[in-house]
Length: 112
Image (tube, rainbow, N blue to C red; front, top):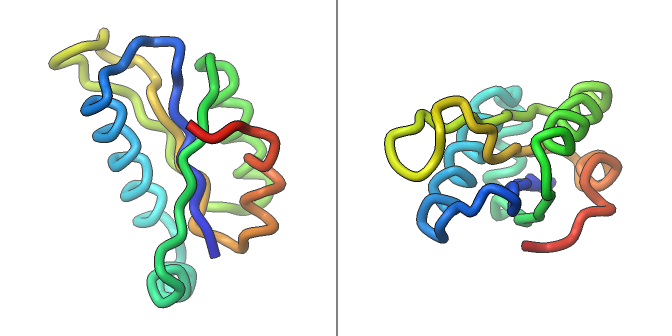
């Protein structure tokens, strides 16, 4: 079991902002997973990987692929209270899910 968290590098988020957005994505996708998936992922150590993309378009394309694979996923848009304009898409979490399925969606991306 694995979860991939994908963040945008083209919008100039600071390190703290990026970490917060990744955490939002992780939790939201986890909450949308089936109870059995949640349990298996937690018991397996909650494996995560953080990856990068350089556009909002890529986030939405990956979210579409995740939906087609039947994976829980969450696209995060910023509230706009600090560094970014309201509604700016910042991150995506794919999974938790079977590692091979998550890799079908995110396996070609580079680590952050």
